[in-house]
Length: 163
Image (tube, rainbow, N blue to C red; front, side):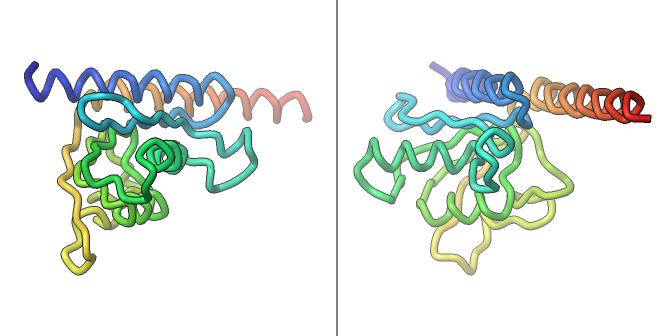
């Protein structure tokens, strides 16, 4: 299997996770972690559902992967995520020693894998990640745009009902 095809397969699973987030009214962000060509952890955004800033897709997946591996180090794993990680998630990725991260779409307002900051490849940290950007970018970008468009429309309708 070609590497790009393998990456695409796993990113498609991250997209399925993102759709679970959208289905519960959360921002559609999904993540999977792969070890030895097997998905060992999945996560999706649940900030609104769980009412906590800590319910990011990446953190959920990292927690599950650590349980699976029996260690906090995920040194032989690859993370696939639909949106560029924020500073909190990027820090957790570095701390978990994840060697490779594949990102679908970048986040120019809050991304920390090259947009606002690049925590994942900072040479001053004791660990850096190999980062692949733009895999299935159009599909993930459209999913996010559709979600926020729908959210703005709903907020406008709710406001009009109140007035």
